[in-house]
Amino acid sequence: MAKNYNTDVSKGIDWVVVWLYALLVGLGILCIFMVEYKPGVDVLSTFLSGKTNYSKQFFFFCLSLVVATFILLSDSKLFTAFANLFYAFGIFLMLATFAIGKDIKGSRSWIPIGGGFNLQPAELCKIFAALALAKYLARQETDFTKIKSQLIGAAIALVPAILSIGQNETGVALVYFSFFIVMYREGLPPALLIIGFSFGVLVVATLLLSPNVLAIALTVIAGIIIYILRKQIKRSKNLLVAIIGIWVICVGIQRFAVPYIFNNVFQCYQSTRIYSMVGKEYDCSQNRSNKKRTSDKEKAAKKPDDYNVRQSKIAIGSGGLIGKGFLKGTQTRGKYVPEQGTDFIFTSLGEAFGLSGCVAFLGLYLFLLFRIITIAERQRSTFSRVYAYSVASIIFFHIVVNVCMTIGLCPVIGIPLPLISYGGLSLVDFTILIFIMIRLDADRQMVLR
Image (tube, one colour):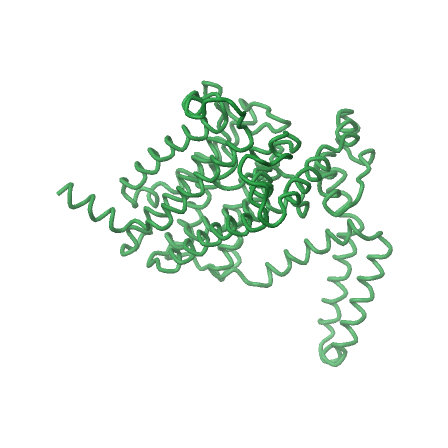
């Protein structure tokens, strides 16, 4: 009986995703190797030594394979039965970091687990939030067309995001907003996404334009809309009230809300990063945290993020169309790019293999995302479909933000490239995220709740 069971399980596994996963992890280890390789050393011995980052990543890959095997041999009903418990445990761990957490690079989001390793609950909680959201939306009594259900769904995603912000992990917090893509697929009104996108555009415009110019522009836009809808306004004065109300809200956001957030909520270095993205200088003397911490002035003066991005763009641009070749990148091999094994790992690809290599690499990611969406759409169970879309959304967000960071289109917020960036626990987290989906897909003929 056990033999037949294992055969059935192997037939249900989507091996395309498994091989894509293995290929991407292999490419990640290769990229880390390109960054750290020193001529004249015995490559095999360094891989087995556990002292280099690429050898550590290889060992974590082996650990990830063990974890993946355990997940594939488990019962898929385990994830539905304990989804809420996992989520509660994740929130508990995030709260625990405020008491027993370890401060690393200004972020108190790590829990020491011994042996020099640290656990980041905010990363792990992404998996638990995906399971909890899938569990909630799969309930028969959940009607996601109602405001109450939408608010509960949003709360599941935003609670860990708020805790992440409290831990100074803004980058991880933003990842949780990717769950709104999933909620849109499950019936969240498009108007809410449009409002969110419009708010983002308004924030960027506030950074780019002076307050008076933007206020005048918003007034002109409101006037044009009133003129175009003048006939409808004659029939219903409520429309005019709505337009004026939106205008007041927009002006209030650009005049008061955005400056308050940048000066009182964000840390000086966070505001500096966002301003540098749009080519603007941020005055740290306006920041509340700067009055308490003089070190922020030093950070602003050094402009480490500007330096990182400049060096990253130089490295990627120097690769040209076909790249300089394997282990021939002068910028990455010369250690000119900070954090090039983690946040800026994409630069090693760009310099070594050029534009053609980057396009092929991103094509692998695109194929993986397409495959995951295909898996999501073939599910009979709402739980499995929502979880699969959560996996796609999280990976998509990480890819877009990380690549945009390296080419200066997004502020540096410490988002790793999935399965590629150095980080053993990050690799394990993504492995768990992906292989739970594969396990659920193997039982797609079942209706899980």
